[in-house]
Length: 208
Image (cartoon, rainbow, N blue to C red):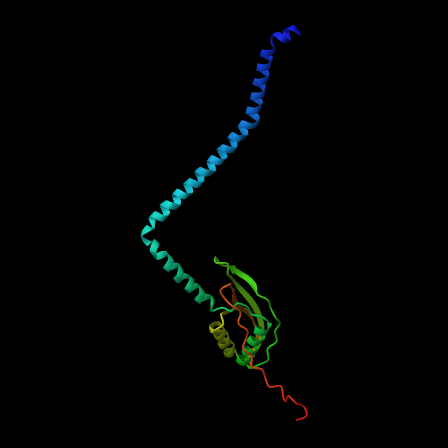
């Protein structure tokens, strides 16, 4: 006990040193590591900003032309998008098939289809495609003319697949054509319903 009383200051000093060492390794090293990470992040951010400034200085002479160019590009993009329908609902598909029947001069049998995504664009618009398969029966020359016409029609489409059975003796070509119709799903476009002439339904009063 006398030895402890004599050296209590030394023991206290050792305990304080031990506590200081513990605090150093437990807290200081962690804070130092966090500081180094934060320092590296700031340096990376500064380097990125310096590169951006250098890039902007390179094109300083054309800065005043950028906004008009962006507006022109946006107008050009919208003009292109407007060549595509936004949607092709069931009623649109019926109207289109009726249009094809007037071209092919025959009744067409088909089933409804749904659009699928083809290409996502940088402004969040999406180029979509819708497949419609229609039957045909014509001469071989008529088949060629039909293919040419569909490829140049006002509705943007391509022939995805075609089958043909040809009777050379009768000069009769028959089969099916699968058309890929292109749509543009964009917030800049609005859906336009098809124009349908509603036929007269008769008299309002059945007793007249």
